[in-house]
Length: 65
Image (cartoon, rainbow, N blue to C red):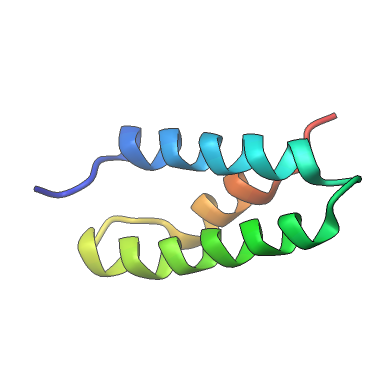
């Protein structure tokens, strides 16, 4: 089964929520979140030819506020 845009959006929101929660108080956790987002984007790119890696990373790493 191929993941859909809806799946990627949900995953990006989850990652972004966790990174945002730790952005100022726990910089190491933010860095770990960035690595997880990058690793997942590499994997998703192999699973879905329409996957937009940069869009996914931007959604995961955007700052809220």
